[in-house]
Length: 284
Image (tube, rainbow, N blue to C red; front, side, top):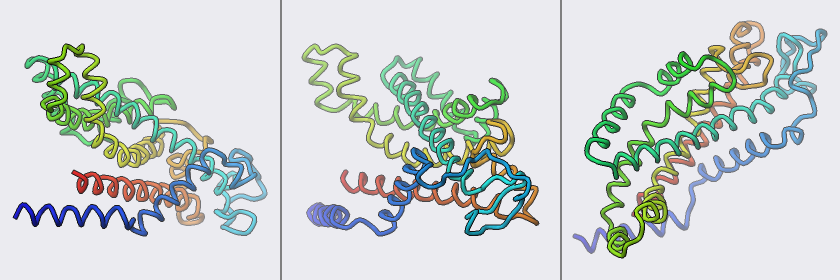
């Protein structure tokens, strides 16, 4: 049975390594396009996302305005394109901060004393009982609304999930033979942690962070939709959605296109993240 399992696992590895699903390739290309547009929005549009035109308000999609115009005559396509920069920056930045905090808490809990581990683990368990969006709202209530508060709130809300995984992985890696050998050879504990434990425990965390970027984008857009982040006329996807909700009956395009941008981006990130997770599970 063990031999048969090894053969099946070997075949699965070769199959995944040789053939990448078409959906993953498409998702990767879409994300690459979004990233390029976010870095260089001028490649996609020459219109200003803040320029108003009273004579061109609430115009439907056309050759002049691909996504139509809003109530102030601003080009919705330009605002969606420039909004990618804000949303991706918040998603990547908040996820990076959450990952760093999560690794710090998880490693400290796993390698600390029993009391430290007990206290940090209970705190993490309590925070994990609440949805990330609710935790982000609590952070906003404490630090106050504002453009700078959104990344902080999203990062702190996502930290408990990374901390739990980091703790579990650290406990496993800490029992590995190379870690014990490093300790027996007299290598300083801090050097062992940064050279051996954290790098080898980071694999599932990086895959988790890939999916977490999409969650962070949705959370940030939701907070902006509620008016707790950047304020109009900032071209951010959540703000554009919030502005368009009052015109769904007469100008549906104001809300639909930024909503599609959020949906497509998050779905593509999830597809790529789940594929990376599957590859890692098969590799193990």
